[in-house]
Image (tube, rainbow, N blue to C red; front, side):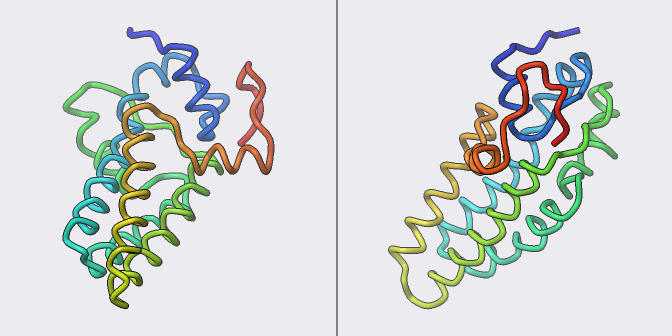
Length: 164
């Protein structure tokens, strides 16, 4: 079994994965990035193409991810990929991660609106920033919206025993 670094564990706790067993996190931590990576690739494509429709097509996915503890793209892993990798199901996402998806949904709406209304530079700036934030969480587990959530509502203790 691979171990998970304390830095990665802390970053995942900030996202709301508190009280999750060490073994489970070590096994699934790389796969927790999958949903964010897929969203980031699609948002980046929507930005590069200046496509409001592509950006807006992601809004229901982000909204569902904000409303429920399982991201829609987590289902690709839970009902498919994990059987190929021999790993367990992903843990449920906590409030900070869901808050991040809600922020993402609003961001997608505004970015799409910017392109639709002819504010192309604004659309590219917003889309570029969204892509950067998505790349950051997809590659390092640093989630800026989760940090904002934790700043407003409190950080978990270092032991990870808090509820999120």
